[in-house]
View (tube, rainbow, N blue to C red):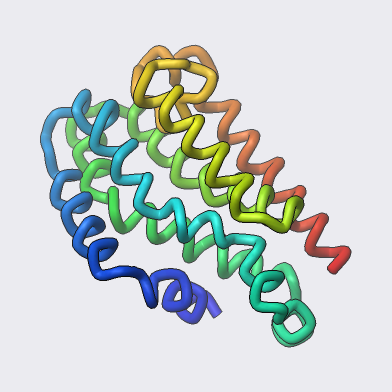
Length: 191
């Protein structure tokens, strides 16, 4: 089911999207921890926006809820979809995580992992609860612009600054990811 969800997530994207993903992957090899945190990761993690915004809404949009939830159950699909969405973000930015580890930037590594876990979880929760892609797309673009790009710490989901990690904001995003997945599972239970 995971492979099917991953294939479904990345297929039929415009050609420029694949090229941009490869470029983001290559840029993730930049050895500067600060450049990775403040520019490369926030920009690279914009690429899965359209993919993540479909989480929780795809079945409603295509009117396949009855078919999908009967065959595999809502929790199996939730897990497969969430893991595939997280895998896309990981695949685009994996070199950055390796560079964080090599340089001993464990705060940056923690924030990177939390960002990869939180963004698809929030997308899934918003998509499932609102039935709309627009809720996540709007929230994510506002958070991206205010947080990592302009230093508004409460919205810095990727830990672009070390102060974000040390202040506990990153830990709050980890808790938010868990709550979002729980809310999604609860909403799916009712389906």
